[in-house]
Figure 1 (cartoon, rainbow, N blue to C red):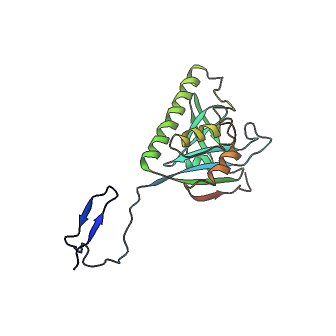
Figure 2 (cartoon, one colour):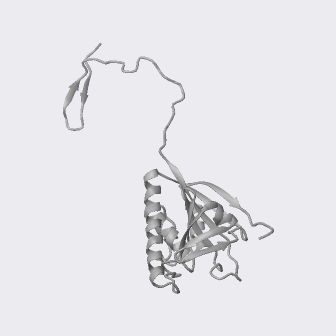
Figure 3 (cartoon, helix red, strand yellow):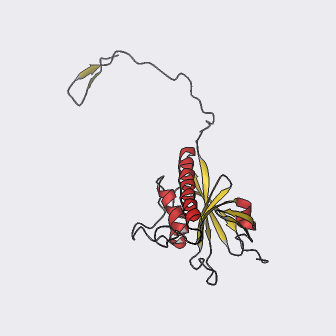
Length: 204
């Protein structure tokens, strides 16, 4: 075999000494790709003009069977079944019985996240609930709700954007974030894995 010389970009000449086959056989079998991922679900609910606080719709976020929902009165944690179908909801200074959230149409946007990202969002939501409950203990007849920076949709947007998921239209001001805006942005997200529909029930 004639001598082969290769010149590097730096002007160094290399001479081919030998060649070796490092993969003697080809493996064409299907390979398993392990992706360490999980999901969280953002629940976007329709509006209803005659309901206090529901004129623009509502947004909550579900993680591991617990729904975090910023209501006008306070920030609550509800198990998934109770959120949709009703039951007893524990509040800071007592409890109430609700009829659930199926008096309106709901859309669940399931987002792919890593376990670490899910834990980070969950910790942030838990922190926000704790802060709100501490306030309610001292001021039971007041609320920290704000249309601009402490609404149902702004809380969800803040939590998602803490892990790099865009949840508001960057062409506009970051606040206020409406349920419709958050819905439109997440439906275009590359993190969107699937959509779940929770239609309004006739008896609600």
